[in-house]
Image (cartoon, rainbow, N blue to C red; front, side, top):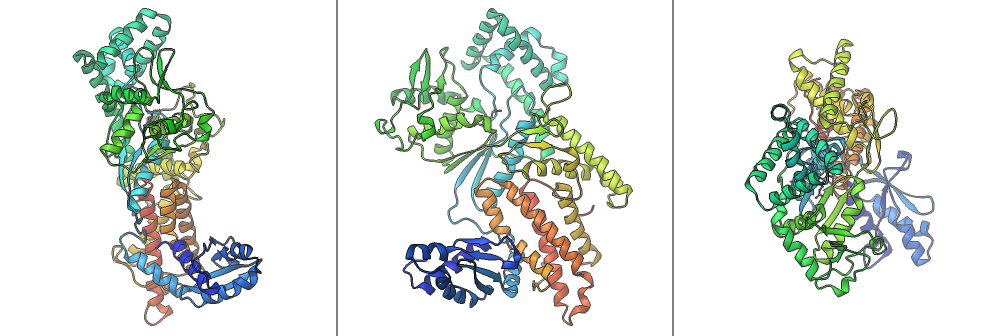
Length: 597
Ligand code: ARG
């Protein structure tokens, strides 16, 4: 269930009835900071009192009375300047939780209006290794696809590969000039990167070389069969490398529509921009100057197409270079039209680093001028910093860290840590299961460390904290999950069958129950605000609340506590729901679990 939403509706109805209003006012429900004051607080009375110039505490009294009479509420008290503190009723809590437990969706009910949403994520560039910047996009994007899908949207995950553009002219000439066939066979991406570096350095000094590269690019774009074959080979070999990384990360896409997929649309897009007066020529290039345009004068433009910030920003959005070449920006406009017309998308979400903020603001404004009213969101994120220096993560040699080496190191650290814990008898993983455990724990740890941050902040990449089996880290949550599974094994209780009715009584049971009941709210909020870290926070709360409960309350040994065994059943059900939320929650984040650790 959606706990907060349900309480909000109950409180709004109580406000309306108690005060004899025509409409239900906003109840403004908040979680209380301190459980001493109950579980939730209704703040709506104060806002109303202010408007009616009434005494808020007097208005609050009949509201509290009505709320107290509801089955969901054990206690409702007027407090402070006029808010109402609510304590949930344990029996009501238990019934709602039992419903969540018996439901395949774990209480995450679907949105009322399901949208078609394209999530554009990962999107690395051909002939270049993925670096850690693409890691965040890949991890965040995958989590967002799953979260949005989980709340009932139709989601299309799209890998908008950088597979078109000026670099290919340089690569074609470069391969011919400096290419080493054996090296290309052995490790294509490393060789392509080397060739690209050499070619771009040469082009800077040698105008004839640069001109040749431009000519080869033009030939490629006009469909020259030789250049096309070379390009196809570069795309295919890069994809092999990408596929191994995606397999390690467990990332999948519904579409792989790279920049090249839109090539045929580009002249038409630019033609329309010109015809409608949205783009004009400047020093030979075709540009959109958003600071000059008035949407009212453009046929079909949305009235609020240009946000204030851009009205003052004179940076042109270039859609065709003076040499006639189209750009990243042109492709992105075509991509939006394709998503609207072919996918019938209601929303397009871009999981791309914060430095591309201006590009997306300009892009969104430009398509609004073309009349596109699809929701468009740049889900930006910060950078990964070195734990020691606090600067952008680099290798000792000063080059950018590749994703491959980062994943290798994460697995290596996970292996060391697991070996250490095994030696101390804290983990029991059989030799035969080690490789699977290392991959699940190591890759899970990388993902968790990335997702647990508010995505907009830069963060320091700390391998030691990352592979920790205590505190807020992936391995800790996986460990708690395995511990729950071992309770079921030990008691010979079937993990797949719902354990039974939940009747929370002890304080630690109540705390755990209230935490678990927030799952639906958290998943919805994390999805709709594109903040997977909210789900990480919840899972950590669950693990901690479970741990306290398990320390305070015997589960398997609770048999003797009552004649019918209801206490044992209830505790088993709480344990099981904790485990299932950990498993399902981690799965939404793209992180696996192990039944034994
Ligand atoms: N290939 C780009 C890069 O590596 C990211 C593309 C993001 N998606 C988009 N539709 N612009 O920076």
